[in-house]
Amino acid sequence: MPEQPDTQITSDSLTVEQAIANLQGEDLGLRVYAAWWLGRFRVDRPEAIEILIQALDDEADRTEAGGYPLRRNAARALGKLGDQRAVPALIQSLTCADFYVREAAAQSLELLENAQAIPALMGLLQNQIPGTLPAPEPPNLEQPYDAILEALGSLNAVEAITLIQPFLQHSIPRIQFAAARALYQLTADPVEANQYGDRLVQALSGADLQLRRAALADLGAIGYLPAASAIAQP
Picture (tube, rainbow, N blue to C red):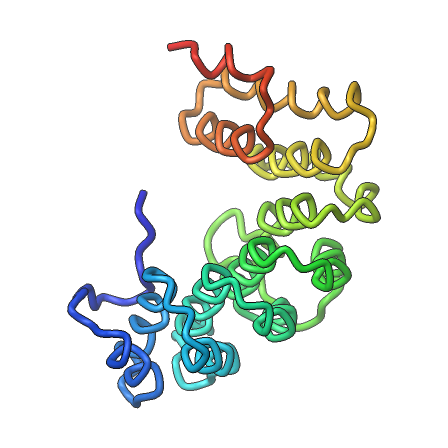
């Protein structure tokens, strides 16, 4: 499914200058869309980066449920733009009350490949950050565990292995998959690592299409070659 901005505005007739101006304007809908647009079109101009970082502290755009749509889009955009100046602000965003801001921040920190984020991600994995709220939809997860696990794996956070292992038994399969993916990346012993890869291969034979897709994405992310024959099966 293509990514959608957190707004009803869908016009693509913006210029870079208009998007930057809109992000600084008073119209909340235009601001939310501009943040999405700057990330979608990879506008890595210095002024865009600075304004997106500032948007991570926005208090004006807030839903009745307490979410921060502008912060969500800003966090997502900063990961796509690849500027390391965003790392401290994204780490701070891991403490945001909004579940989806935390999820977007974790995903973007993974993309930015900066190990400075590891301690904060480990703390979030243990739900040690006060004031955060669970996801508003069932199953009302306390934290975006799959995004955190995937980030820790990509950041080579070997110090997090013992924290990740219990998530292999999580009640939600996609979180189990994320844990297996991370442990495959972090485990030095090839034989042990392949056990985690094989676990994802086994998930390809499950009955749930969405779960098979999730496992396939995880296998693609780790480049697990023994999965090739299973993936090729109709």
